[in-house]
Length: 220
Length: 220
DNA sequence: TAGATTGTTAATCGATTAACAATC
DNA sequence: TAGATTGTTAATCGATTAACAATC
Image (cartoon, rainbow over all chains, first blue to last red):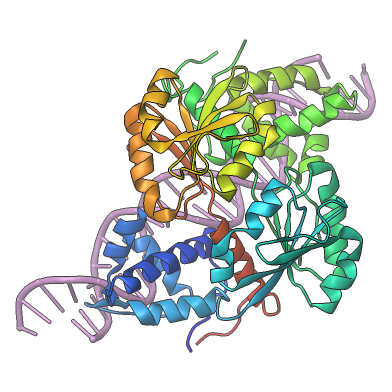
């Protein structure tokens, strides 16, 4: 295996690698075994030079004049993205979003196994969602330690998120996907990505409000 | 009302305005009526100069030496973000994610009303989720037109997303929040934000994989 | 007035893109 | 070889930050 070339690249690159990976899977399924950066970019609405640059941070995967071998690049991206292994994940919060995440089969397909869901609600504890048990929140520390869980999805109300995150990190979790609409403050060696659904809708509302006079020309 | 000053600002600014809005709501609830950019930034992990710059794109909201009046800035941000009105939204897809969105009360609190949910599944049609009816997908065009729906949430499988988006746009929708893991191609006057859950987890997996030798030093 | 904090400028930093030599 | 397409350089573009004069 190749790779690891430069040690600095835009934060957005990893996200795009994930898009490339998915598009390549699709091409592979359709029996296409070679693709140029131009063709791949067309599919994804991304400039070909952007794709070549992103890939160049990790190695030389293409053949000049030919493009990229789909299967080979898939294998390399799988390795780079850390998708060549299984990840055990816990979900905290068995509400609507937590449940939706537990039911999201794309996670499993990618090697993310939902080991358990934690909640405080007596009525939910003991049940399971999509095969994953709902356990009492009080047991989370032991569970995370015993099962060497590294990743967690936080799907609790904003007010509880920071405490949950702290507890998770204390137990050994080092990557968090956070759905609670707050900026959780964490040690910098813990990776935390937030998905803020309200903010997305609000941004849409903003754009809608000004769809008419989109470029503001009025100075006050 | 003031504002509309500059006509160009970073794409990230609107998202941050939404964070400011939420943090100010919290301050307001706690009876605090003045805040400095420094204090607000501390709460959100955002540099004070960033906050001042973001706000400056829209007007002069603060008082030198004093900071910002919480209630006043809230009112202004509400206006800027387009949250001073109600928005009618449809959800397409009554699966786990669609249902979670319909149940997400923060939307309603912000003035986003889920007018209806559309699905093809006979077993779901006729039921309702959190007070919103599930209607047959075939009726979506009429419904959107009759109710002048402007915003939509797409929560269908990847393969169906483009067709759904096209249909929505044809019916008059101009803003889309897309949960399907594909890049939907739309006319540029339609606003589309995507939430790609798998990509988020994959990015975390990447960071986990290299948490040890985070800064790559190995050249191949 | 003295201290605090804004709004804005200019510098820095980071990401994208075009262009092209290298090479399959 | 001629044509295609890479990987990389350098230019451009955009976003963040520090610094500070203005002013409450």
